[in-house]
Amino acid sequence: MTDGYPVRQTAPGPADQGPDRVRLLLGGGLAVALLAVIGASGGWLIAGGDPGPAGPPAAAVTTAPAPMPTTDGPHSTPPVTRTTARTTPAGGLTVPELVGVDFTDARRQLHERKLGWRLVFGTGTGRNVERTSPEPGTPVRRGVTVTLWVAGPAPAVPVPDLVGDDCAAAADDLVEAGLYPRYRTGRRGTVTAQDPAAGASARWNDPVALGCGDPPSTTPDSPAPTP
Image 1 (cartoon, rainbow, N blue to C red):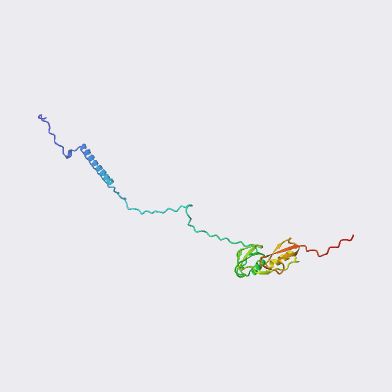
Image 2 (cartoon, rainbow, N blue to C red):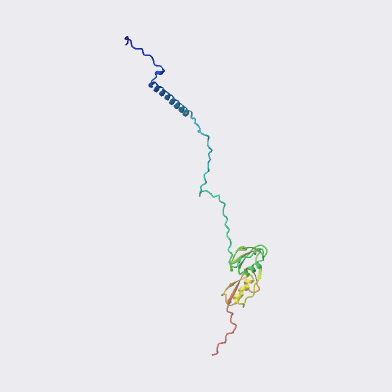
C-alpha cells in the first residue's frame, strides 16, 4: 500500500543495461570504424600514394621479338658468286696461247688445228701477236676464225706467178703467201690472168685478182675452102 506519493524511480546501474543499450554501442562502434576506413582511403587518394606491392618484386624478363622478313629494305645476305664453267667441245679443242708469238708461226698453229685466222696489223713495231679473240684457252670448234692483233704493220711479200695454174690451187698458193684471191670470171678452170703481175711487191692481206676459165685455144683456124 502506498501513502499517496508516487514511487521514486532510481537510475539503473550497470547491471540494469538492456538490449537497446547494447545495440546503440555496437552501432556507434561500427560507424566509427567505417569513418576511419573512408578517411584513410580518402587521404591516400589525395596524396597520390601507392600502397606498394604486397610481396617482394619478381624479376621481369623481356624477350625481343624476332625480326620479321621484309621485301622493302635491302637484304644483308652477301651476294652469291656464280661460276660458269666453259664447255669444252668434243676433242678438247681450245685456242692456243699465241701472245708473243710471231704471227706467221701463230697462223701455222691455227692451221694445224683446223682453225681459221684473221690478221689485224698495228702501227707499232715487231711481228709478234699482242692479243687474240677468242682468248687463249677458250673452247672452240673446228672452222672457227681466230683474230690475231699484230704489233707492227703488214710486211711486204712478193706476188707469186699463178697464170696457167688451176684456179683452186692458185688460191691456196696466195693464202700461203699471205695474200687473198679475188675472182673476176669464176672459180673454176685455169688462171688466165692475174693482177698484180707475178713478182710485184704486195703486203700481207692484199688481194690478188684472178681470171679463171678455159685457156684460150692455140690451134689456128682452118682456112676457108676455096670456091
